[in-house]
Image (tube, rainbow, N blue to C red; front, side, top):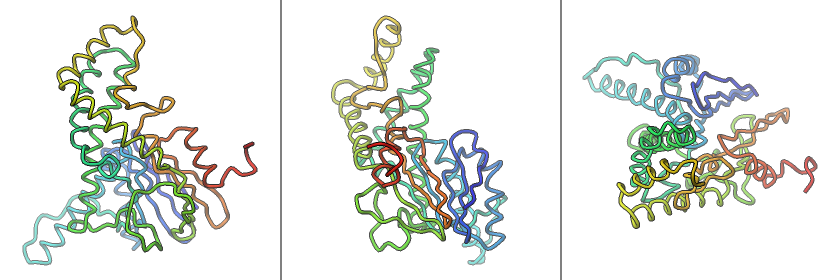
Length: 312
């Protein structure tokens, strides 16, 4: 098993390869580093008649998903070129390297996690972030940046699902190898079998249903309360009031309307899709996304990977 780490600016972008050639792209980093450092290297796989068996997106943060979106946009540009060329109406040949074939995507899409309110949540987050970024209070600027990242990531997650759809790139999403089941959210399920990609064995160790429910319920609580008790201008006014009172009263903006973090880790992060990977020599690699240490340990315990290692 070989792991190649690409420059990603922020977040992660990793290429995992098994001894027999199975390949997984693990997150895509930022779009700008996909353009400048990664896509030319990945295109060499196509030149060698090799493919990416799967692209794995751990969670929706921009620094994990936007590079993957860029890769899909590149492939769509090439597909359009192929289509026009085959129909006798050629267009300009793409100037970007062509990505390798992608066999499938593992991605718990934002809308599937949150439900019908996803668009409204995106709007509220995008509106709240600038007020926080403008405060110059370090703690609030950090929170504003997190909100901005999530707000930007929501449409990117929707685009990933759209590009992968049957009428565009037709890349299966959450279709596990060897499974006849309909694709669904990927999570730890009791009794769920591990699966192989080449010589690598993958076991889902997170998120559990609890983390996904926390994500869904938290955002929906935020949305219901923000729309039901005050309009957007009132939300901005409350932010300003709390900023003005900073240092005089204790508050935590992470605790808004039921949107609670978990020990300092934001809700989208604790819902990261996590895998334990084992190769033919039983070497192990843990893919955690940006989850939190207690949740990671719980997932390892549920998956049976901590038996005999830690006390009960």
